[in-house]
Length: 291
Length: 135
Image (cartoon, rainbow over all chains, first blue to last red; front, side, top):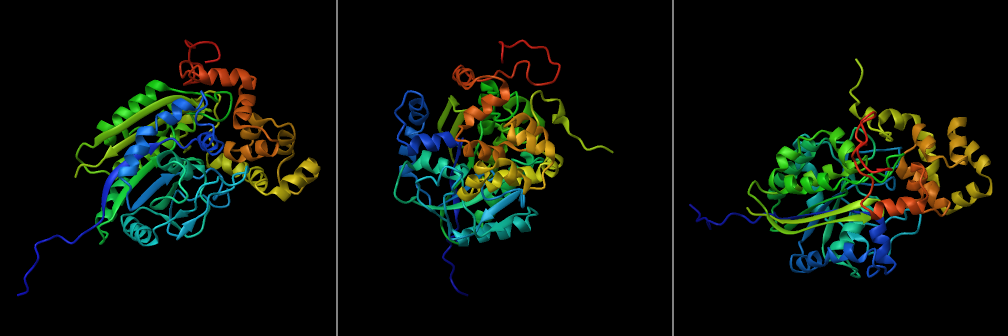
């Protein structure tokens, strides 16, 4: 009988998850060199520690959960969940010219692997080989990495429909995160992967109620995302709309990233909250995974 | 049996659901067309003529011409699509948001600096208002 090494074969693992708002005005402030202005300084100083942490914890790949804002997906086609399996994704022109940020290099092998596994777990992903990525994806990269000439790791865009109701429930997003966790643990290469959840926090961009901000809700959401994410995932859509504004529903995407973490309590590396950035409350968390 | 739409009683809010999306398909796709510079130029040159190329309702066309965003939303428009109309006009998102609230952009910006619109009194239609004015 052949001797066995006794070592488990190396597989990919999730090292951390990052949560952040993806407000377009933040990207514009950065691109136009306004980060030191009194209005913006508190926002960017809240991410200083994040950039320092990030520099020491660059993963091999990020599964970046975000939503498209009528950029790559018009009303011709609205996928509930879409995973980017392409080799590269260009920053989109959203009407003011494309952001001056590097192209996004994907990880087609890992993305195809995740798609295969997650679809077999009953989640209907749309597979996307070509699309431009808007501020929902590029602003979080800028906040965490600053302004490099190339992004320091591969990024798998994972787009969620939170624009056209019904959007996926918190519970479904949580379970999808679980399925992504399982898929990554089955990948036969020792990659370090982070899963990011973006969007939020409380904001409403439409109608006479535009400008709604709910600090209490946001802080409670952060508390529960850390300590009671599965309970938080049971919150119905209408509670997000009432309490956090019609666009606050973006927060369900954070539950995908949180669902991808292990069952053990995570280490809270950083937590930040600020009002306002343009029309929106800024929220941010970094959680390290404890297997 | 009717579908469950519990968000219908949220004040000052139109949820862009599958029904609104159906109503607003051409209106929103018109907005999407403004992502291209040549289309923006054609629209600006003769708005009515450009709109007539789209199978939109007359009410939708009038709402676009008047830049009445609340009416556009009522007729199936979605804010992320309508933002492209604002960009064509050279308007900031905050200007557009303010225009839907009946405030000036300055008043709206000040409200945001002071912490935004309070959820108090703004969760349900008919809820007693306990918050500050405008909030």
